[in-house]
Image (cartoon, helix red, strand yellow):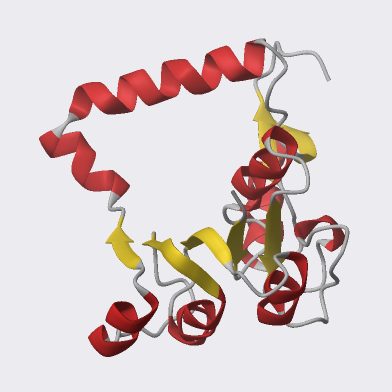
Length: 184
């Protein structure tokens, strides 16, 4: 299985992408919309290279089996160019600003699925699944199977400055606020 994970900002979703790559080495390409996160692309690609070409090259033209897209817009449109036959394009947001449309003729001809993942709706319809997913993520973390990328840990008093960093898109990975009693 080969996957592609897109991200318009190095601070949004890239920890997930990195975990995918750690869990399935060589099986995922992670693409960032900025050049501030050099780890956001697979070791075979670069921040300046088009992800469509990377996916096509790495899959020998087959395409990605699964693409997670929190960006939408042009990234979604380009993702359709590198999805595999019987692939699945998972829409998880529109951070790029434009809501893309999926031409059904293309979906039919390439025989792939477009699936929406509205995580917030699970609070209403399946709240137990959120707890279950969190517990599973904690088990993976405690078993050292996923390692979130921490950009920086700041004392609680520095949260306003940390929020400015996030707002300016200067961070990558997670920015963590420590409580007063937490070790550095």
